[in-house]
Image (tube, rainbow, N blue to C red; front, side):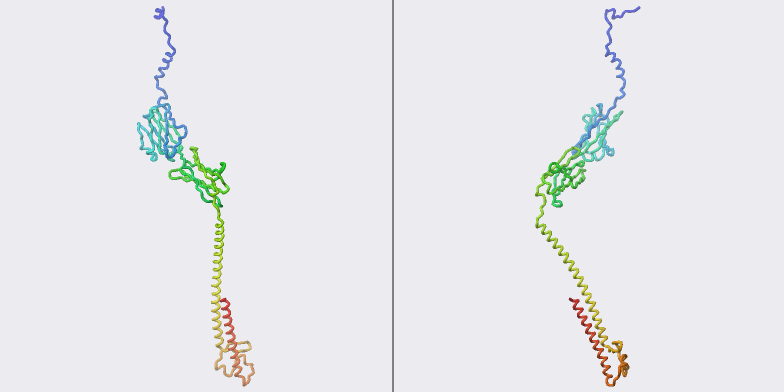
Length: 386
């Protein structure tokens, strides 16, 4: 027996269940179960390189996705260069004991919106060594994540100035110089009509603060009239600084005719001094040589006179073979004719005269020889004295 429904006894229809009530009954047990991704997050850093100017400040921001309270998390900032610890935050306070010395006193942790998972690090002042890759990491009790980004350090130097000085062959040398650039800048010379001019030399030196000092030189002839400009460009900021100079005719050196005349006279005077010095040196050497020869001849003449006098002091006899020196002793001279006169006929009245004739001829010959040698000596000395 089928009982009637109480709704039917009252003449009413039973209520129908709505579709959303059925869906709620199905999803309610799932909502009560723990989510498999609960407590996980991702760290998001700067999407493009951070431009930091030398001497100024730079702010590196990072945030969590999804937005999560990070007050109880450990947050670290690292510089990829040697994995240097830049800043460390834990237990709602800054931990600076492990911070690298070059960052001490230059970092500030910005945590005004840390409850929404947004933090930032300020570094001031920026130095040239702060460039490179960085990372910021968040760590909770159940999850850890990090993000990487890059920092480009740059600096624009002072406006360039041009130094003018004389150059070779009547040209002038222009030197464009400017300090305080980072990284290495680009230097360009331009002539009239924007014509590119190639520099003669270019140097880049690094100062103690790591900034570059630039010097670029250009030689310009008198035919290059008009404006010349030097521009220096920062490749990071695409910032350019330049200077202009008018190439007037007064800038080029003029050669005075008197300068040429004085130069020629100086050259001739120098040549004359050199020639005079050579002549005096040769004359002195010749004089010394002549004096030496005269001394030698004087010595030979004195020795010749001594020999002639010695020869004259001894008697000479004439025989068939010629003049021969012979000394006579009293014993050998008695009753004997000298050798060489033995075949001469003897006459009683002329014996004494023949001996006297030989002795006289010897003395005459000696006198003649002495006079001859004396004349040779005198004439030789006179000629060499001339």
